[in-house]
Image (tube, rainbow, N blue to C red; front, side, top):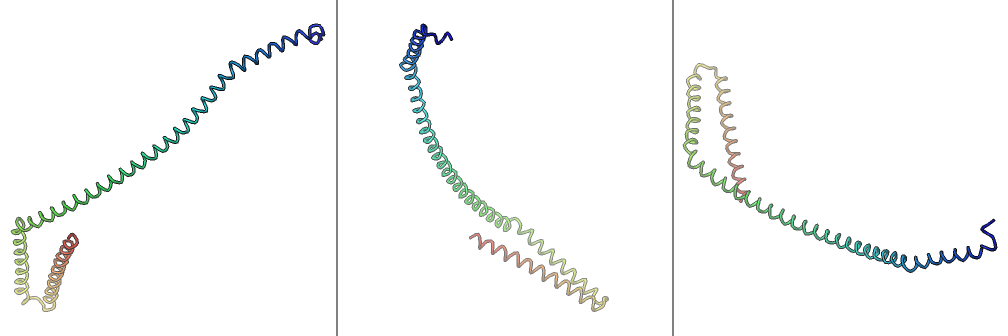
Length: 172
């Protein structure tokens, strides 16, 4: 084999060692320091980015907490404002409704009561005149029905008055 020839083997081995050691020396003195600086810089950046990530997470948490505090305060103030405006509105409506009922609808209420009286009087007069010609059982049935109707009207009017007084008491 020509590679293992004793005459040329020593010169081939010399040049092989020369180029390999030269290549090793160039890499060791020029390229490896640059690569180590780049790796160190990358480690520092990674450290800073991790610290930055931690600081960003902390800042994000603070922002969230401040947002929740502001939101809860805003909701509380809006709730109080809504309740005060609602109570003011109900008071205003109640005052105006009572004043309107006292002033404007007094004539309407009196005419309504007057018409109710006329209707009941006309029915009583009708029963009085027709009572002589109708059988006695039928007249009693009609009178009982009228009494029941009057009782139910009185009960309903009393219940509405009681409910209105209860509402006024609850509002105070």
